[in-house]
Image (cartoon, rainbow, N blue to C red; front, side, top):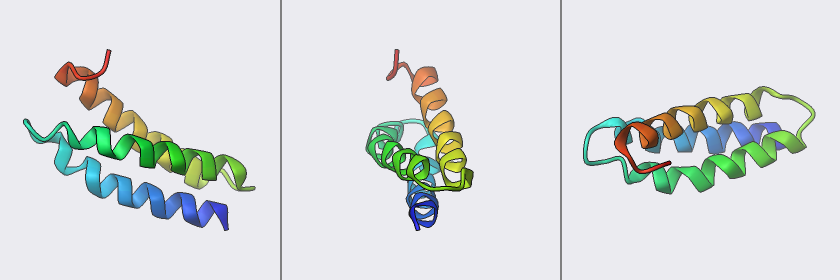
Length: 73
């Protein structure tokens, strides 16, 4: 159950993170980060690792974009 919830939160976060790759929309990554962390937590509580790993990949994409844009040190 937690794995499905982690996948759903990861997909919602990915929907937010994809348009945030466009210049001047990087602020949307800050909205997605708490959702991604929540997905990682739910994924860690599940017996399967796929939801957690998906959320970690989305987190990596958002963090790299924030680092390149200067919004994350």
